[in-house]
Length: 376
Image 1 (tube, helix red, strand yellow):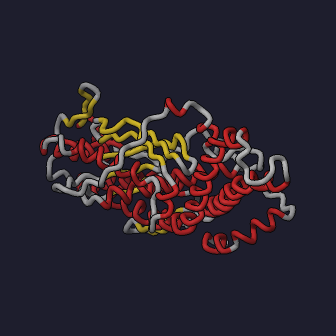
Image 2 (cartoon, rainbow, N blue to C red):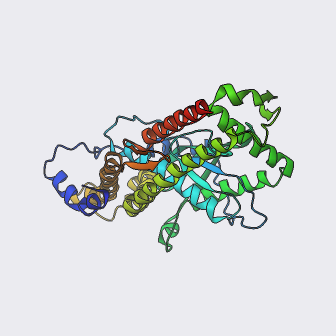
């Protein structure tokens, strides 16, 4: 069953689950994803970022950016709990949304989502999902360039309302991604043209050193925690075109698997938005439940079956969305398409998860470089 089929069978699977299927599901008595954080002192959270327009003015800076799939935070990677699987979904969707925001600014070079961290990009962005419940999104973001210059190391947070979900083509937490993009832009414009040129040089040498430490590591030295190029290879060095070709092959893989992230969004996005909206409703419900109960504000008589049904209805809607997303995300993990790529003289077929495919492809490229170097 592919992802599209899984999506079309979603409602049927829920009915079957309700009729005694043994498939693991989140227990009704559990709080929603992220609610355990909502019970903590919210005063200790970072303040929500103020709304701002995406910066789109100024000359583009031709830096390549790699957005690594977000870290999932404190979850059990082997868990069958729907809430843990949702965090896995969010880690990928969040990276895609940040990539799209940076691309929309038209102020950068290529922006790619990386399955895992590498020396591929001139500027690499990593993030951890600290909290997400449909009402609040809290990310810890770190951006560091190839010279080890830290561009960003801070938390970003946005709070959504029902109005944010009711807008057409709504992205309720767009403010977080815009704030990250604008913060990066403000750092970039403070760098001199010379600093940007040196960054590009170091990025090339650092990537080359990852492929062949013996050949290229001596070109780089550490000075006050930053990498600098103490010398540059000759422009006629035959290894430089080979390095560039290997790097283009890695870019080919990243661009190819990017289609699978698009497929993930197409399959999971609508249900994810429903879950977020339900999560907002439930987060608001839990926050004022005590006050409403003590004031006897339930529309039905307190303790009656109607009152209990009213309390349960919001709870149940979140559970439904969580189980839907669990099924879809599991299907994506299990059915990640094999990637077929050509290295020029042979065709390689990669299988497994995207992380596994990426690591295998990079290993093959390093072997290819070694073979070419030995043939010189």
